[in-house]
Image (tube, rainbow, N blue to C red; front, side):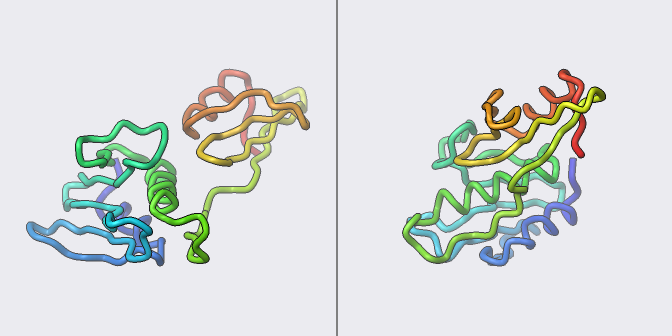
Length: 156
């Protein structure tokens, strides 16, 4: 589990989010450019590392009745990804104020025989290609890593 300081460093790397300190040492982060009434992206980030991210409009995540997911056990990549997806889900596609994306455009993975697979992220899915042929698609990066490991591939 990431510490509060590690989570804060990730969340604060998104310049489009504004920090709002709330009661009991908890911290919220608002996306003021939201195209919806909903503006809170990170909710009640607590000194013990617990917290929530708004994901009601994000596919592939189970949310509570208010549209939030618990991020207590998220690693750095998972946290960065869900925050990016949350911001994008609150952004009108026709708006010029699009959030920055830190996800790589393409990753190359190789096996010991020199075979190369490429991994790209597009429209909420991770795609694995062998040359120009689609090999498979995954909802999370963790699934990509597990698949690649099982198949004997390592990231370059």
